[in-house]
Image (cartoon, rainbow, N blue to C red; front, side, top):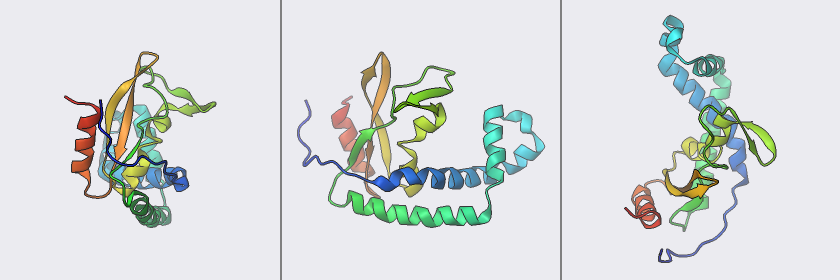
Length: 170
């Protein structure tokens, strides 16, 4: 049984959904930077789906990348304000239980969604802003695992590990 860790409040951050484009633009440009030469010289080394994403990332314009970096800084400030006074945010790791192996589409809130997008939809925001986050097992739904995501303020990794241990001892 968990001991109380303090106040539990609902937090709202409506801007989070808008960070998907920031995530895909900045991550894509950075990943393509790492793999550009290999994509050009040995594309057969990549899975077809990954190669498609890399080629798409190659077409990200400079102004879109600069805009994504600017948006990341604005979002980082918003997350710092959101977390002010709280040890952590607790939320689902994904909006659905684990998909079946090989599954490419899932239903999320009544909308057919790509599995990759669904699985990243509640974690990408924290990647964009550089907030420490971790996921701990939180049981199963229909026999499939689900996770509880804990997100902390910059430098709050120790607090997250302590909370994770309390949620899932051992």
